[in-house]
Image 1: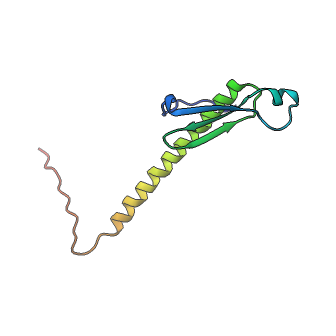
Image 2 (image 1 turned 180 degrees about the vertical axis):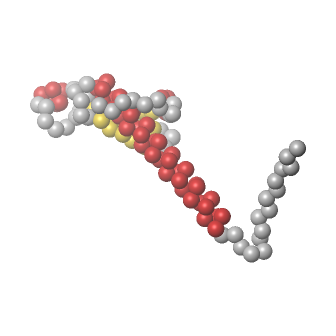
Amino acid sequence: MEPVEATRFDPKDVRRETMRAGGPGGQHVNRTESAVRVTHLPTGVRATAAEERSQHRNRKLALARLARKLAEAGAKQHDAARAKRWRAHQELERGNPVRIFQEEKE
C-alpha cells in the first residue's frame, strides 16, 4: 500500500465517487461499491483505486495517487517555465543589450 503524503491541494476541491470494482471476487465485488475515483476539480486530474476490498483503503490509495499526479504535473510546468526562460536567454540579439545593474556594497 502506498503511503499517503501530506497533500498540497484542498480536500474541498476533490470529488469522490464510489463504484463497483470489476474483476474476480464473486458476490462480494458484485454487491459492494469498494472502488474509488477521485477528481481534482480545478485541474480535472483523476485517480482510481480498486485493488483493496475496503473502500477506506482504496480512498487513501486514490488520494495518494492524485497527490503524486498533481506533483508530477507541477514539476512538468516548472520544467517547461525553466526551459522557456533558458530559450529566451539564448535569443538575445545584437543591438538589444540586457543591462544588469549591480548594487553597490557599503
